Amino acid sequence: MKSRIPLILLACGSFNPITNMHMRLFELARDHLHQTGRYQVIEGIISPVNDGYGKKGLVSARHRVAMAKLALGTSDWIRVDPWESEQETWIETVKVLRHHYNESLRLLQSKKEFMKNKRPIERSAEDSLSYQYSVLPELKLLCGADFLQTFKTPNLWKEEHITEVVEKFGLVCVSRAGSDPAQHIKESELLSKFQHNIFLVKEWIQNEISATQIRYALCRGLSVKYLIPDSVIAYITHHNIYTEESERKNEGDLLQPLKLHSSRVNPLND
Image 1: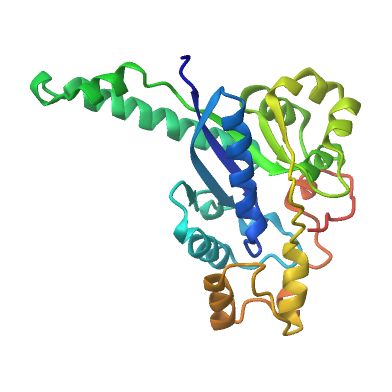
Image 2: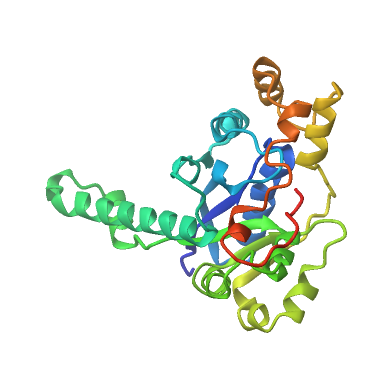
């Protein structure tokens, strides 16, 4: 039987706060990729965006990272990586992908070096097999299907970055109500060219949990139980994170990528 390609799923975003749907994306994507018979998903990574992104209502990264870690406390394959949020300023998604790709390359090289330096008597049959078939995992960007629409927003993405994302890495898009990712691909010459590297995942049990609506509910003192993990609810309550004041943060500001361009457009909503 042909060996499966190891694969890492990376999700970038606000996670403001992390919701059950955010975590479901990983499970849906893993099932879909395993069913292709080509891949073995070995890890999932959540990368909360840097505070410098400037999105309306975006609370401090230290809170968003902490909430994500609490939410994923029961997962044995998805982790939170704070690297992106800890940079001095906002960085493009493609640079986050490059970072994690280079990290996986570094880990693979370290593993091979470790095995090479092991004395033959110390090596087990399992070690030898692992060393022999060690390959660099593929890294793909995991997203909701409406993410494809952002490629059409003027000045939000550089065309060369879109090309690198879909050509070198690839996308795994999970469907959402009201979004037609297949149509977005069809209408884009660039996306059509690399559609073999874009995986569309059908969500058969519709779950349209919105982080924006959760924040609105929290600001009004309404229950969000069963929409986000209890541990996250307790953290939010303890730190009094989401308030009418926090929702006004960055109000009227442009997103950082749009600030880098001369033409002005309206900020994107969550």
